[in-house]
Length: 352
Image (cartoon, rainbow, N blue to C red; front, side, top):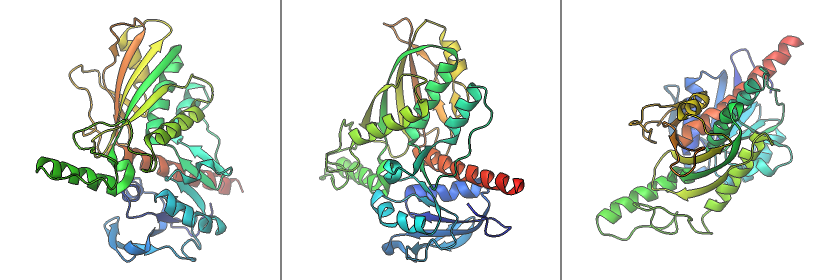
């Protein structure tokens, strides 16, 4: 990454009108990322759309051959298809890429990143420094994998873990604005005794729970499971046995919910489990009457956990309930990746 002038870095946001794109704009502004230029890019049909960034008017531009000229870093918050269409143009211009669409995770040049998990392992292993990454393609980790890896990392510091199983409730916003709009319309139509639309989901999601959403709906829930498995496995690095997990489609607009069962080697007080878990990016509530909800964590960049409960049939088994804002945590992670690139570049510049 090269700094173009003293005022900051030149950044492009591809998929600026998407839910993730809008969230990234908010996080960049809130964290005061050192920007001198922000290009908002998207498909032709939204090109020219007026928006704002940092209380200033901004216009979304369609992507063209010159869009990445002079751009240090590009966030791809677009659909996988749109990323596939344009990422090589960014790469050809020497632009570093932070991919939130997951299209590039299989690319041999790509590295999966979650600074908050990497720092968690570094701290627990007595290494305060994480290695800077100068890769050109950086894939932002799936938000549920960040939560799961954080739970396992925190627990494994103090306890031996026998096994873990997790049910993950996926919100419709993971399929973008189209998923949110269809759940809204399904809800309205169902309550007015009209036929519910099925353009995004293969059947009714409103007031329902599904173990699948149709093989022609991409990604399928099984593909999401596989992605979370890969990301969790990459962060655990063999330190802890990977958990069993299942993803269900829930009638939730925003926010993941996780129901986790963990069995430890030895039975210990639930309060000791809570103490081990209560470390960033996790925040635990010890009030038995205050299990957190996805509504509670809207706009938050941490994972909220409820009080730990013992399993009635397993002496060393514990239940952990967790919720997170999928859009905010994803955007926060992506911007943290960019901030580490900035810090690494500035450290290298000072040394020279």
